[in-house]
Amino acid sequence: MKVGENNESGFTMIEVAVASVIMTVGLVFLATLFTLTIGQNRHVKQSTTATALAQQKLEELNAIEPSDPRLFVGGGLDEASKKTDYYDTLYVDAVTGEITTTIPTGGTPIYDRYWQVENDTSLTQARVLTVRVKARQPSVGKTADETKLTTIRSW
Image (tube, rainbow, N blue to C red; front, side, top):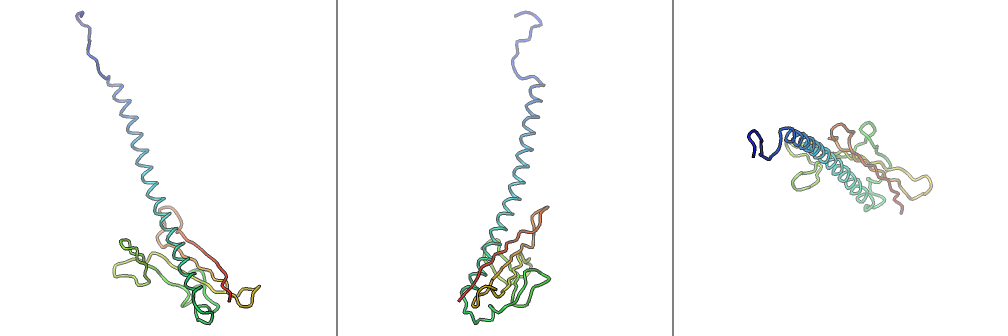
């Protein structure tokens, strides 16, 4: 070995800096991906729940007798046109998943459900049933999730 010759091996400062920048960019990308995934998860959960709540109300309306007052023509599908006995506000317990129209103390209503019963213009003994469920807490930067289902009930 000659005097002044450096025989040490290792990484240079530039290599360490470049590796750090690459790793930082990757971690920032990963953190952004996690944030996006959490938002999408909330959206999917609300959409699925809204659809299930609408289906539940349609099943209830399909299971009752045609003479039941709940099948009388009326109702509305939004806050402006809602009618008494044709809407409810729902709370879903985050822990148990229990759905109730009774909002617990300190709880926040999560969904509004509206339904409308109309005469079918082409059938004499039939009703058109429409249910709309809207989430009260939209995802960040998005409109509130909602579902609207329609069916015909005949007898």
